[in-house]
Length: 602
Image 1 (tube, rainbow, N blue to C red):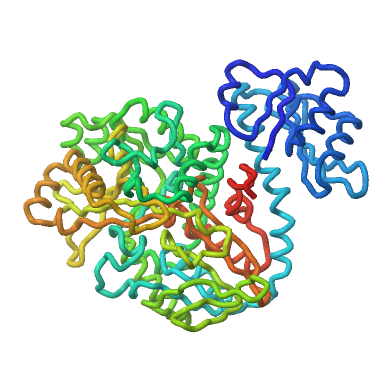
Image 2: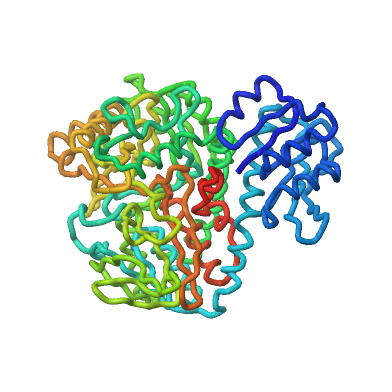
């Protein structure tokens, strides 16, 4: 996407606008007659960001220079006009001309930096919609209007919640997974992220988030080894060019676009909050005997980060109570030791909940079976079978092809060949998180916790209050970011050990007595495990919709980074809408080509 800014900008805005896809020509606003028309014809931008409306000759020059089907967009900033009305409209001077949308942006009270951040984000979303909506609408309108058979590949929490949504909508559901039944007593290493990780999952309004680094430390250090405080868990010399390209895409996202992506993810966290409430109301059995606990305590060791994140939680409507270190220890006596050791700058009690994910998956799977869903465990699906026109017409599974009306693919970080031929192929890489378990000693921790340790290798940790198989009170600690590239098995054992040690250090600082007890009894070593989370370069999850050969759809969901559980019901709603032939906001905002279209790679 190419955006032309045709006027002078305040000095504090200019650094914010660095990055690809922007042309700044301030001379055009006061230049010679015809200068802007010439610039539009020469540069052929997708978007004009301006404070003065085009005249007919400028519009004509832009139209004549661009392809007949190219969507064009004007964002007109009336930031100084308190009486301006924000609106969008179409301008179509003649038949056969490309579509021009004019959006008048009213933001008279924001700072100049905020105005331009909003204007650029708005432009990208409007242009994205103009480019993708017609094809999506055509695909959805062609879906057969019946409740058909659906094959779901992958039995992680995202696809199982989707399966329940589709069963309730009247579809005949069949689920395939390469791993054993999650209710089986198999070793954790044979499972994917949902069942293979620790027995705890958390929902908060920032659980699915944007991971773009910051101006102080730079972009996410995917290529720097963990032992050097980076994110690379793979052997750098073994990385392929496509993996280096993925990292390059992640590092060159301009700040305003990163902010727009994060805002979109946080918006769908709000959707997910309502969806989880509705799901637990409609399916009360899912909340029974799964360790459901309401409320999350966020802890910080850095007062600057505490202040910034508290403001962020207030803005999202998540805050229940803000606590000083002494108040944290008083309300949560299990953290008295951390307070005494000076590990706390303060805390915030926020909206959220946790569950014991292993029990939740077992209950969900049982419910689906009762409702008629068919499961094929330990049955890997090798990929999509395509017809002579290149359209998928079945799944290649154990040397045969199985066919359904629709296919929903959600393989987590293990897409590989399964996603070949889809737009999602190559987008999802793996990021490891590691887990350990501690006894929940008296005085017991009653609320699950998020711990932020600025500058630490295990910077963000989730501590979930759970119980063991015999009802013993436990704490499940999960943390860490270790990028594996495109191969989820590409793990450097030395780096993995460093990640485990970092999480153990957090456990020792915040729960010293429980840590010592776990070390003494062997629980600390026995409970070690890791899972590989599906991650995208943009931090945007993926929701891909494509036609298949027999009038149905192939839908791909994934790439939720740390928030697959959190946004599972949103993904389910989006898939169900697609199979009804109806749009859903994620169909565009989680479009798999969103970042590539911005970079003009598609």
